[in-house]
Length: 523
Image 1 (cartoon, helix red, strand yellow):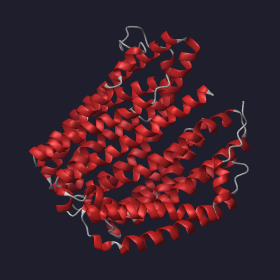
Image 2 (cartoon, rainbow, N blue to C red; image 1 turned 135 degrees about the vertical axis):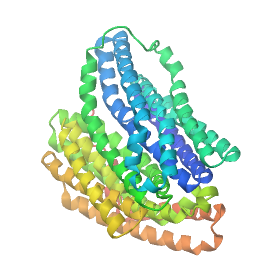
Image 3 (cartoon, one colour; image 1 turned 90 degrees about the vertical axis):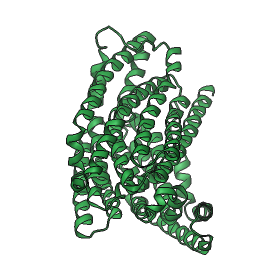
Image 4 (cartoon, one colour; image 1 turned 180 degrees about the vertical axis):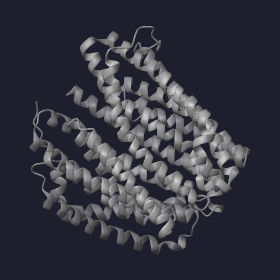
């Protein structure tokens, strides 16, 4: 009973800290929009996107997935001192590898940044500024990788709140730096100051976890011993995850940097602002469902229980349908007011970025369900130790993404909405292939039942969206100021939750109970 309460407390702490961090992230992006002119914001977003791409590969993504399970296993099998030796070996390896990557990226930035921004060839100032931003912010990758290493250790020891709240420290530092730079500087100087704040924030995100590491005996970090034998297993586990995440990051660079550089000034910033808003429900709802399902899927795959594996997958998929489809409809309805209340002030307002950001957000919302479902299905392959299939399908999605980007940018000329829609369609194709190839491991998958649920949820969501639209339109007289946008968002969200809740009780209650009812065997 005590362990169950401890687990619930840890989950609650993690959720609370993550929510705070994501809200501060929106404040951070709002500061970027308010204080950076759109041509400077484009260069700044290029500078922060490229290191963030490697951040997912080396830090919170692949490193955490490969490091945490092996550290936990070494600790259980060999004791505390053996776990410390393994962690220090990973630290030594990581400092050298990531340090070399950062140094190489800084030195070669004048070569690859112009290639990514080839349409900016007539905007020499923009290319020079983007290159400078990349060089200033790339050390952020080094510190955030150290933070991910620390987070993995603390998670193994049951500490979740501090690692989850550490990104909030980063966001607070960046917000303070952005406000200070915006009030006392302007233009390129403000962007430089904000870029430095990003690096300082990453450094402090690691530092806040250091005292806890010292208490656990993981200091000093460096060791003169040879590499721990388990480091080989760590690298083997790391490699396929790197490839899988790299495919997703390639799509981001193709969409938000390469093809966006062919569009008007401000397009890179608009796509980035819109995607940040999408990450709030995706990270808080979609990732939560996938994370909750992963341990059970892994256990059932290990036991070769195809029926139980299918049951857990179906239950998780139903949860995504019930949660994310209405979320995407509601987000699309309130998109303009949401963008307005968060971003539409200062340089964002004078740069007329409201409409392109709104159109990109609406196109992104159509893929909210597919982004999360693809993650869930990919985890299904990983639990069967099949890492090649998701990577192959990921490369297919990259090709599809490029084709749609070319079509929407050069033929149909849909602007930033076309690039967001290309990302959505590529995710739909990826989800379809993943489901088709995972079918042999889903022997009792109820196709008709799931499709019926999707239809019912779409109808309920459509009614909810229509009523929310009418309510928001009725309060259009409140104007385009902060209070007007904010009240309409509040009205839309409140009415949407109430209406969908009532409709779910009337028409979806059996499906809700099927998701909530746990038929897992107790050990």
